[in-house]
Amino acid sequence: MDILRNSKEKPRILLVEDNPGDIRLTQEVFSKSSLAINMDVVTDGEMALEFLFKKGKFADAVKPDIILLDLNLPKKNGLDVLKVVKADTHLKRIPIIVLTTSDAEHDISNAYSNHANCYILKPLDFDDFTQIIKLIESFWFNTVQLNYE
Image (tube, rainbow, N blue to C red; front, side, top):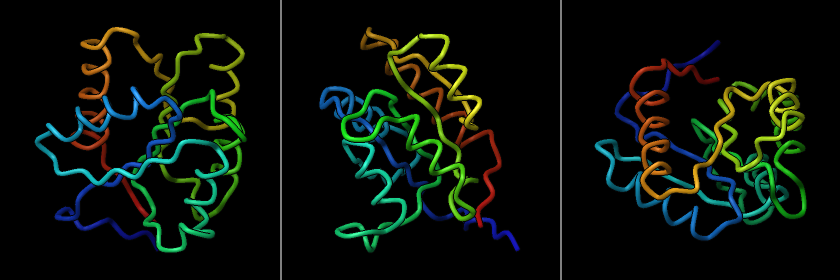
């Protein structure tokens, strides 16, 4: 049976990103949000899977509502993370937003073939990046009805 998350709970994002500048910018934009958002950050694909499967130092990790996933990650790339998450019964319903600099057709196609919920090109301009993060927040937390297991 599906349980809708209590609307009073803060939304939780897992940011999977290895670029310190993009991490800081994403955190900053969400910190200025009208929503109080909890954000966990991991910096490579292996850590992302350890977090999601609650292994090692992530034994007490809380399942995120949304995953923001870069594709170009050390240790295990974002596409591999996407495949594992979407193949798992307990994790596959978490929306995964691929947020990356790759505009390669094969990356876009592979992401959607492996059930990414959307694919967004990461803008290089500060203001454009800020706008993208605000749009993600508005759409995924103010418009979409999320459903949790």
